[in-house]
Every structure is written in C-alpha cells, then in structure tokens.
Length: 182
Image 1 (cartoon, rainbow, N blue to C red):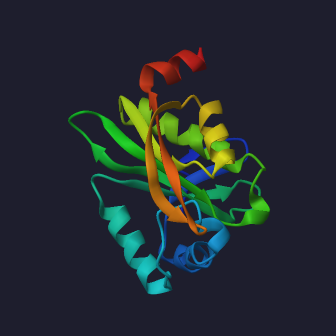
Image 2 (cartoon, rainbow, N blue to C red; image 1 turned 90 degrees about the horizontal axis):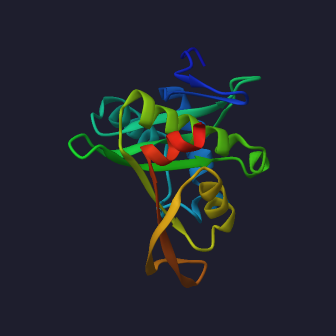
C-alpha cells in the first residue's frame, strides 16, 4: 500500500485504511472464526467496507487503523479507538487480526501497545475500555498482559455458538499504562 506508517513497532505498523483494503477486510470479516469474537453478525460486502473506510477516515470520534506486517506491508487486521469522548477523555479500544494463520505471532499484542501510545501520548486520553467475550480466553489474557483490568461482567450479554456468553468489561488508565512503561 502507498500509505505511510502512522505508528510502527518491531513487527507491525499501523496506518490509515484505504479503499483497496475493502477486499481483504471483507474476506476477513466473512470468516466465522474471526467474527465469533466480534460484534459483527451480518455478511460483509466490499462496497460496505469501502463505505466504512470512508466514514471512519472522516470521523472526529473514531481512529481506525490497518495493522500491517512490517516485512511486507500485508494487511493483517484493524485496530483503533471508537466513540472517543473528548470531554471526559476516553474511548473504546477495538482490534482484530483477520487471518487465523497469523494469530499467536504477537501482531495483536504489538498493535494493542501502539494504540496505547496513540491514546495516552498523542491524544491525551485518560482511559481506554473494551468488552471481550468470556469464551475468548486468549484475548482476555492478552489484554491483561497489556495492563487492562477487569472492571465488571455483563452477564449473558451475547449469543454465540448456540449459547449465551458473558462480556467482560476491561479498562486501562493512562496512569497505569505510564507506570508499566517506567
């Protein structure tokens, strides 16, 4: 992709999404292995993803970035901060790595850290929060390693794979993140 890196780590870079990303995003988001842990439930289309990219890039309350592998620039997934409340200085963290073959390689963990840099150093947010489903134990563990704290449980909040699951509310404060960096 022609777009420059917005934030870079050792394995991944984050960059704004482009129209050409709509096709791989549609492929990722129509994979039940990927969407089982997301709020997504409808089939995705390339046109719909192009519209999402356009809306996201124009939003004053959302920062949505593509996760790309540094070695070859391949789009691995999407991350960002949604519904930013500029008065109270918080937003909802979101992330997915779209190809199951790329899971477990540290790409998501590094992207999570890069979004924390964005939130707490560049945007001066006070808090990031998220909801994660109880059946997504790998994600819960990854968020805890990144410093997120369990703040509550929304019981039987979602229906997946034939049964109800809890949603775990987790949060990370700027001061907690800074203390971990020292």
